[in-house]
Length: 286
Image (tube, rainbow, N blue to C red; front, side, top):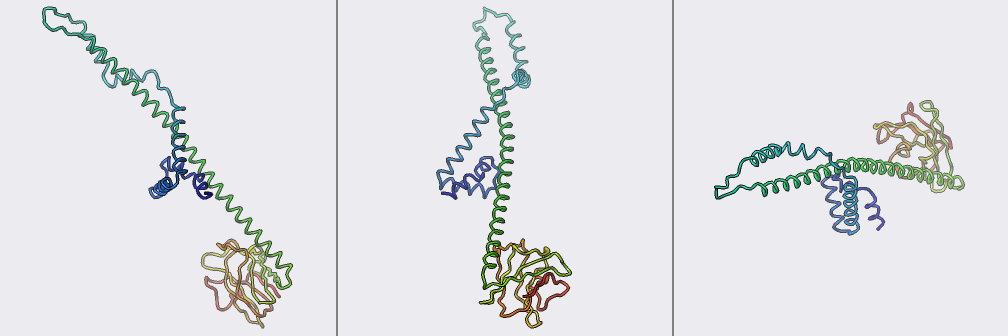
């Protein structure tokens, strides 16, 4: 039910009523409405609210609408013809007498009916135009709220990510099994820094994205972690920058039984067999 409530409050039903969805999205909404009475009830409520708003904001047509309408329809000429015919003498000798009263009544009735229809049409068009503008504003507000919601969710995720990383750092600092190796920036990037955690018991190696400050790598390069063992570099794997797509604050690298130091270099995607020393970014001794 929580998912259904979130779906109703997402704004997609308003966009469906406005006709702003693609054919595939429209079909999805109709399937949801067929499966869940709550969705159908919400769509009906939105349509009724729009209809009520349109009626409440109807615009009265101007006074000259009738005159201009009948000028376009040619009724002014018809009235002149009626006046000419009514002034003609009536010959009582003839067996048939022409009477214009009935025709005049029908014409007047037709006039009033047409005026009422045109007035209703003008009011409807004006109301629809105003409603369309209002709904466009509402659509923009809904889109803005959805964007703000996404930004807020991103901020919450980032805070949870940072908090998890800080908690892990605190736990490791208190544990006697973990050694923290703080690596400092080298000539290529003096301000860079990074922490490596090495477990003395099972020899596992972890890096912490939250405690990492490295330059952003381009699309053709990534970082590679090395352990210095008896003067020789041993690769412990590659990793991305701190703002990578990783969802974990800690990343487990390859284990190493012994090491005198750790270092990070910038290498082509997939890593290198030997470190590129001119791309040495950070380094720290055990």
